[in-house]
Amino acid sequence: MKSTIKSSADISLLFSQGKRFSTPFLTVIVLKQNNQHDHELLHGRVAFIAGKKSGGAVWRNGAKRRMRALAYDFGGPWEGYDVVFLARAPILKASYSKVSKACEKALAKAGIVQSAS
Image 1 (cartoon, one colour):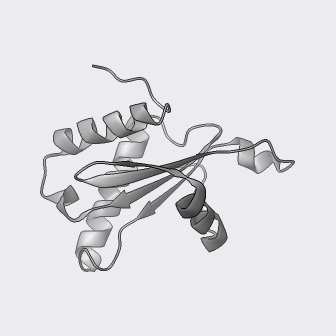
Image 2 (cartoon, rainbow, N blue to C red):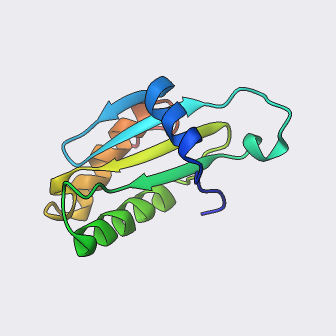
């Protein structure tokens, strides 16, 4: 991944102003970047969040690994968008193909990727 959202202020902005697309396995929060003077913001940024309420360190690491793979598979980070992947508890129990299809639908609804089906 080229650019990761690390600032808690940026993540708070995404949570408050971003559009949410939920699946049984994860929630995708998308905010289109406005053209600011900072050239860094023209490149897409992504964040991967797996909360402590859903599981321990092993679960959180596995969930983030799976979300990073999904973002990579779908061509992320996407230019002009800030995207947060928020893991839900069943993300590791389902097959990768099921999670991938659900993520593709969410990203297609957001207008980031073209749906293959």
